[in-house]
Length: 259
Image (cartoon, helix red, strand yellow):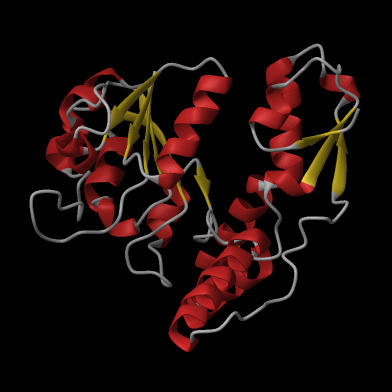
């Protein structure tokens, strides 16, 4: 069971991917629940108690009924299912890192995957070392994401100026790179793992960040890593080759599929 906390644009994509992969999900989004957007939202504690994996996609709000600052703290971590995994790609301060390290040391949680950190660009070396996978805040930092941001700025400037402004092509017609997984098609999960790591090598990112926090100039090198990995491409840039024509999972996950 995967618990998704924050079901906005990104959380909804994660939920869709889980559905494609045949994974069961639990959803928590108090603002959307109050608006009546859908009927299957549940409370955070109920989600934590049932989820084998919990993934956060929330904004950082310090005050109010939907405050997310240190949403995962000693109390909420204690509500987690024993042996759960935690993923945070939203904001570092949504998690109390001291409580998180304690939970890992006591084996309350099986592991954490973190892309965001309290104190960026100078993350805690102990927290980075404790993570199963640690990446330098690049989950939403890709070529395509920066192109979308430029398009939003262009559109706002166009409205302000009262005339149409143009930007360079976002490159949607690019051929892109091919990922040949012909050797893995008998093992769907193995093929999927091969494709995901070919598109975005998390192990390389983790190793690079581990080296950075072991050094002396962490903040500068952390930002340097962000720049280094900003050239990565999203799934839609890649063609999956060597899979059966009727296998639609790849397109549903956003990849292109060669005939």
